[in-house]
Length: 162
Image (cartoon, rainbow, N blue to C red; front, top):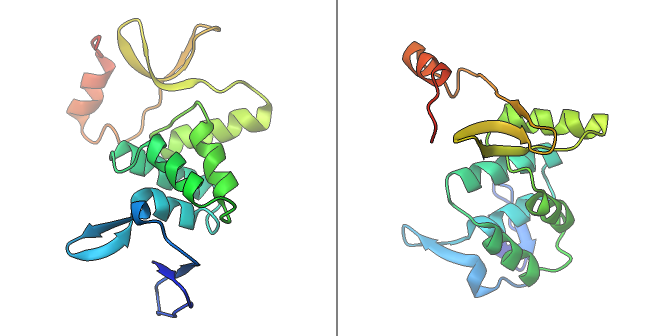
């Protein structure tokens, strides 16, 4: 919850305080004024680890709740907000991921000093999990989260061009 003015305390609710809130950062949900997804991500960015923030951002983008442009606009309206540098770094990163496994690969590649692939990219008519175009390398992940049934798993083994 983000409030304007004095900090209120509510058990089980993390309250973010701001001196002002731009009207573009507020929307109405079920008749209740709430901050937009972009502003909520910005407010959370100071409290989350980079890994957790990346997960929240990616879930919001996968569910099409927020766009990069909306996040950029929220950052522009709140310059210097704690955590804004962390959020800005994530939206400028070229390797958009959809899963925890993909985020772990990004972390491993960074730690090893290796180049990041394009995630969920198209190659030869197929959508692949990770693609290094220059190196001509593809990496596919298999997890039960995305292949929850034997039929789905077998179907994905016989992938057809998209």
